[in-house]
Length: 217
Ligand code: AP5
Image 1 (cartoon, helix red, strand yellow):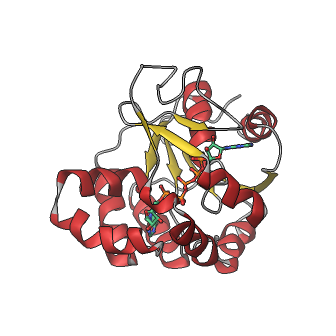
Image 2 (cartoon, rainbow, N blue to C red):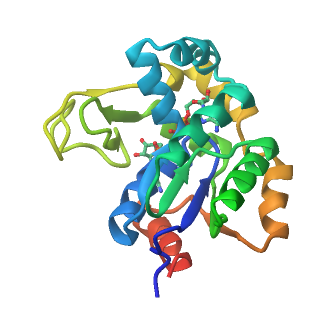
């Protein structure tokens, strides 16, 4: 039996570049959950020039976490509109965020079902971030060496233009790796609830994905 119940809540944890977005794409297709990425939500707010986007941009450009009060408010607003199972990518990243999520789900008679933590060492993460290309149109993720598109600069899926994120430049990427590894308190929170599944992310995209899908079946 899979976990694709109507109120399923899955959390994907991992440092920047661990492969959360890459794996979320497969999980949402195979398990049938809605993918919600706080990074994508912030980038959308920045692109639309909203007040929230303006607040978040300075933190994102530096490679810092956006403050909890901003992030929690945004995510809980999104959760309130959600019908059906959800795959959270990049939220929670602090113990405060995890506790706020627990409280909000409890009010809906729900809870986090499983937390998938992808582990990858720093040197590999830096090479993944600096080689990453994304589709401006559909968000598909590529890597110039590990997962190159068939035609340079063009998305295989929709033909859209590929671009590199500003915060993947070396200085911001190094800072993200220093500041944005999932903290021990967050890992411990989910381990103590018996919900944590840890997966070795330093293998092929397919091998990592197979383990994640198996953990959800
Ligand atoms: P966000 O967009 O979530 O960035 P992130 O956590 O740094 O994660 P990434 O998107 O960089 O990496 P990923 O794990 O998705 O890896 P991917 O699959 O792309 O957040 C951006 C910013 O928003 C944050 O810096 C912060 O400021 C703010 N923010 C977001 N959420 C927040 C929160 N909850 N609280 C506060 N602030 C928040 O893969 C990376 C590359 O590796 C790709 O090129 C891919 O092709 C390649 N790759 C993937 N898997 C493999 C593999 N197995 N082998 C080889 N290559 C691989």
